[in-house]
Amino acid sequence: MRLIKSMNVKAVFAENMENPKVLEMMMTETGSSMGGKLYADSFGFPPVLNYEEMYRHNVTTIVEGLTR
Image (cartoon, rainbow, N blue to C red):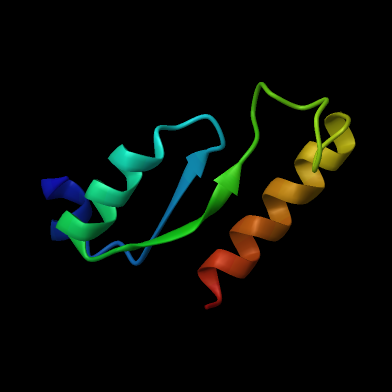
């Protein structure tokens, strides 16, 4: 978390399976915000039903998270 603070990271992107309590603690301690949840191994369930949708979701989430 020191690295996130020292680099002044504004947005953090986490895999959708991450523990929300840990993410909230990290956001609070670092002053960063949640850029969005990404999918890596867990497609097949909404909102990503296949590999292509996973990539589209992740790219859109990253772009939106970095432009807020």
